[in-house]
Image 1 (cartoon, rainbow, N blue to C red):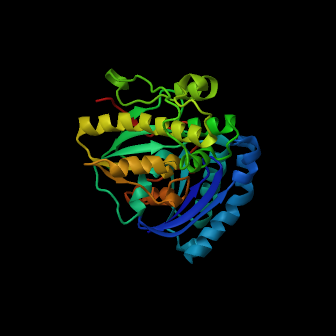
Image 2 (image 1 turned 120 degrees about the vertical axis):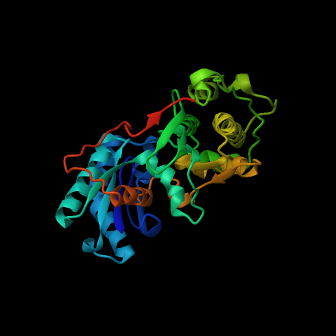
Image 3 (image 1 turned 90 degrees about the vertical axis):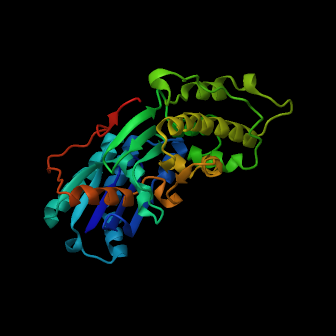
Length: 338
């Protein structure tokens, strides 16, 4: 089964063709970074306009690279939630029209579940059950996955996402855009002990696996000198390294608790922050944990993960009506605290 995937949840216009849920025939991503860089963040109106301009050409390129015609497709999968509503609507409406024109099945899928599925498009596809760590500019989640759509959230940010904290820190200090990429690169030559930033005290009860980043953002932006350790002036690289260490350690403290409590030692990481070098190094070095990361090309928003996930829904007979709507908020998760 060949499935066309469409992804327009934020500022990447993406289309891909995936065969049988695992073989990527094409994966095209058109980035809008140059259009948002001057604002140091995504401007929703610009994003939705660019999606409208580009989506036909990106889809055609995906089909051409796969070497197939629209009539060769068996279904269309599209991100319908969560994300920026204007951007989502462009993708959903295009996918509806495409499916209707070609008379093929259509399915709306969850963007976050797509990130969790991304690692299954590699040779090291993990077996269920496993723990998922989904980290991006909009989401910070620990979940238990028992199947492609049987996912239970056991921990999440109570305020800001980790990727947002990276972006806001980089924006405030003028380090560059996108913030996560810039900070990771700067941190390679910095001293991670130059600043000792605070970590939130979420230890007990239902918040045992949760995260918080509002305090870290406040410390870095408004209270920097209070957390200086070294006496000599700190470089931007020192700031980046210290911030990155704390931001990732906040994630890992909760994740290690979840591993200990559930007994699940396979961890699948997804989302844009999954490309972070410090996060990858820490998990790779931890004994007793099998950490599975998608390749960098599948960490950020892409349509291959959407097509791969869509294959499983379509394969069991699920269909979305042509009246299906997009949603800025996710509705596809159970939430249960052990």
